[in-house]
Amino acid sequence: MPEFTPADDLSVALAIAADADLISLDRYRALDLVVTTKPDRTPVTDADQAVERLIRERIEASRPHDTVLGEEYGGERTPGRQWIIDPIDGTANFLRGVPIWGTLLSLVIDGVPIVGVVSAPALGKRWWAAKGHGAWTETTGAGANGEAAVKLAVSGIANLADASINYNNLPGWDEAGRLDELIALTRATWRSRAVGELWAYMLLAEGAIDIAGEFDLKPWDMAALIPIIEEAGGRFTSVDGDEGPWHESALATNGVLHDAVLEIVAHKR
Image (cartoon, rainbow, N blue to C red; front, side, top):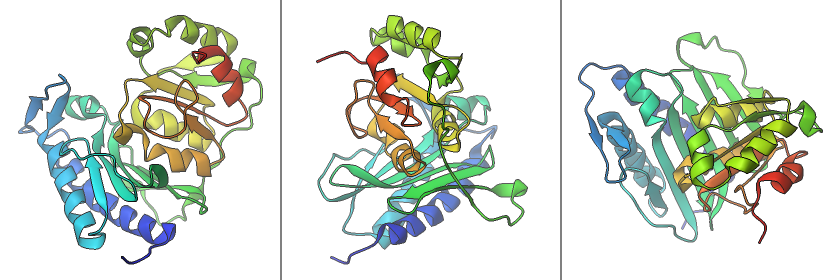
């Protein structure tokens, strides 16, 4: 099997994401968008399926020995090299015409995310990282003007009282039995909002907010976020402090605040 560097894999992921954007943008706000409901009662559109098919085809062509785990066409967690796909993170936003959605693509090796690309074409933004190569963002689409990519860095906020938190989904915290913990955290921080979806985590990587967390997540919701946040200097775990995208919840911070947040929201074991 050929050996690839993280930079090699990142190059492939970025090229795939750019092509995926062409499909998703073409179907965004389309009058003939086909929307169905999956067994878990979440919506899926023809765009979700078309984007994942494209990504799978491109991975098969460029990395035929790698396995794939995706939201729409499945797969199982495997050791070694595996690509994890969320073709459209924020499908509910996509089908309602809200621009906070995007494609998430990650390469994990033995369960550890090494490469992450988050592309949000309706926002005109793309973020990416590879282990050891920093985290970056650029403007895409009509707003792009040839400027160089910008390196990301999380905030330096060191006190909870000065921190801004994004909790994403209040019912999610309630259903997880953590509503009291969330309220305690919001009382301990300066500002709380619910931007939602991928954008909250990218704002954290940009240093615009300091804490983001939520429940009821799958690996494809998280894997691409992790390298970006970590390479920007932040930290990503589950709400209980477990590493990786395998624990159904997310807690991302600028790193400095992480332990203090866990003291409030984590269930002790």
